Amino acid sequence: MMAIFHDMIEKMMEVFMDDFSVFGNSFENCLSRVDKMLQRCEDTNLCLNWEKSHFMVKEGIVLGHKISKKGIEVDKAKVDMIAKLPHPTTVKGVRSFLVIRRCVHGKEALDILEACHNGPTGGHHGVNITPKKVFDASFFWPTIYKDAHELVKNYDSCQRQGKISQRDEMPQNSIQVCEIFNVWGIDFMGPFLSSRGNKYILVAVNYLSKRVEAKALPTNDARVICKFLKSLFARFGAPHAIISDHGTHFCNDQLAKVMLKYGVTHRLSTAYHPQTSGLVEVSNHGLKRILERIVGENRASWSDKLDDALWAFRTAYKTPIGCTPYKLVYGKACHLPIELKHKAYWALKHANFDLETAGDHRKVQLNELNELRDHAYENSLIYKEKTKRIHDSKIKNRVFNIGDQVLLFNYRLKMF
Image (cartoon, rainbow, N blue to C red; front, side, top):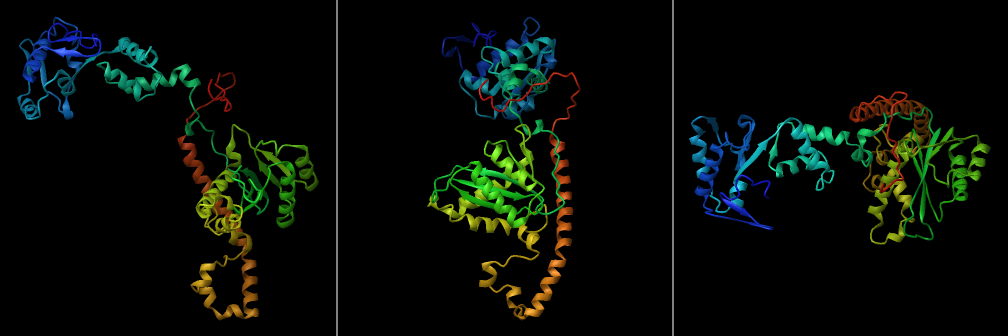
C-alpha cells in the first residue's frame, strides 16, 4: 500500500496495517488535491513521461488533459459529464472512480512483468492473469499483453508443466480403407456396474462401413477377446488388419497366435498418437451415450439394452459415408418399427407381396451395392481431407531438425 500511495502519504492519507483512513474525504477535496499533486509533475517521478501516461475514468470516459507550463488544461465538457455521475465519498470510491497508472517502458517494464509472473506472489499465471497483476500494481505500457504472451511462452518452468493442447498435435494422417470389412478397430469399455455378471463391453468398429459390433463380457482378458474375434471372422471374413491400443489384454501370446492362425495383421496405436484408434473412441462415446439415455434409473440393466443401442447406432446416418452402416452392409435400408406402425411407403406397396417382383428388385439392389460402397469410399475420402485441412490449420507450424533439443511429453507424469 505504501508503494502504491507513496506520493499521497502524509498529504491526504495515512496507511495502516489492514486499512487506511482519509483526512478530508469529500469528493471535491480529494480531486483538488490530486490536481495539485499532478501539477507538480515536473518536480516528481509520478509522470516521468506524461504524454505516455495512462489516465482513465469510470465507465470508459477518458479525462481530457494537456500538460503545459500553465499546468493542467482540462476538457470542460467531459468534466461536466463526470460531475453528473454519483460522487463517491471515500478514498476507495475515488480510486475506483479515477485510476492513475504509471507508464513504464523498456527494461523496467520487463522487470515488472517478470516480478508479477515469477516473484514471491507471482504464481506463474498465464497471459491473462499476469497483466491484471501488473494493472493492480498501478503500472501500464501499451504492449503489456504481447510481452506477457512472449514471457509465458518462453518461460522454461511454465513450458515444462504445460499441458498438451490441440495446437500441439501432429498433422492428421487419415486411415482410408478401400474394401469393406478389411480393417477393424477394437477396444474395451468399462468397468461398469455389474449387469447379469457383465462389467465390460468389447467394441469392434469397421473402418469403411462404420458398423459396430459389441458384446457384454464379465472380464477383459485375452480369452474373451479371442472368442469374440473368431465369431467376428466367421460372420464377416478374416480382415486384413486389427487396430487396438497397447493394453495387456490385446498384447499377449494368446492373441498373437490367433492373429497368426487367421493371417491378420495386428496394429497398435501409441500413447503419443491415440488418434490411430480414434474411430473406436468416437464409437465408444456414441454407444455409451445411447446406453445412458435408454437405460433409465435401473443402471444394472444395461446389458439387456445393448442390442437396442447397437440397432440404433447402425441405423443412424453417418456423415463420412453419406448413408447408414446398415445400408452399406446389406444394400438396403433397415425396416424400423416406426415404419410398420405408421405405414411407411414401402409397407403400402403391394409389389412387396409379389415374390417374383420383390426378388427382381432385390437383385437390382445387390448389383447396386458395389456402386453404393464406391460412393461411400469417395464421400469418406472427401470428408477426411476436409477434416485434415481444418485440423492442420489449428496446429503450431513447427519444423524440427536433427540436433534440435525438444521437450518429451510424458503422459504418465501427473504431478512433477
